[in-house]
Length: 206
Ligand SMILES: O=P(O)(O)OC[C@H]1O[C@](O)(CO)[C@@H](O)[C@@H]1O
Image (tube, rainbow, N blue to C red; front, side, top):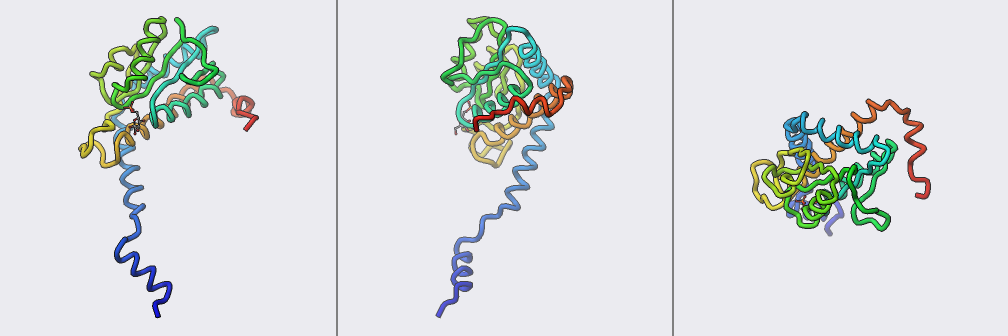
């Protein structure tokens, strides 16, 4: 009679356990290498745009992106709200119209995602400033931007790219998250508001 241990061994001989140690090292090293290549002057310019709109009496910050790129910007938006800025997420039911004096912060690895490009066109017509994270300096999105941060990662359709072994736009989205966190941290360091004060802005209806 086959024991449970023998049955487990038999299964893993056919279908070995996923090697998460190797994949964790791969993801970590790709993120570190790509983050180190982000141009700090570009990131600093984007941080200044965020600070200017956030600290202006009437300026608001809007964020927009599709799929996982958009989800990362939602996290960034929450932190900017914790800093006390007036922040809105494009497409939410309470999001007002963008206007001159506002900043639209966008992320798109490809720089061609139609809804994101349309948002930039609308913001541009309204006279708002536009800041973009993308891999693609020659994209329509980058061309519409006042400030561009290039994240030198693979795009979502670059299958088999030498820039990343990860699927689709994962590396772009991961480094985007780090870049957005770095912007928040730099703004908070400048502002020096105690964490206790930021904490008062945390959602209390969760
Ligand atoms: O960042 P892009 O190129 O605008 O693409 C948007 C989304 O499309 C996807 O590649 C769809 O899987 C997401 O990973 C990404 O967030």
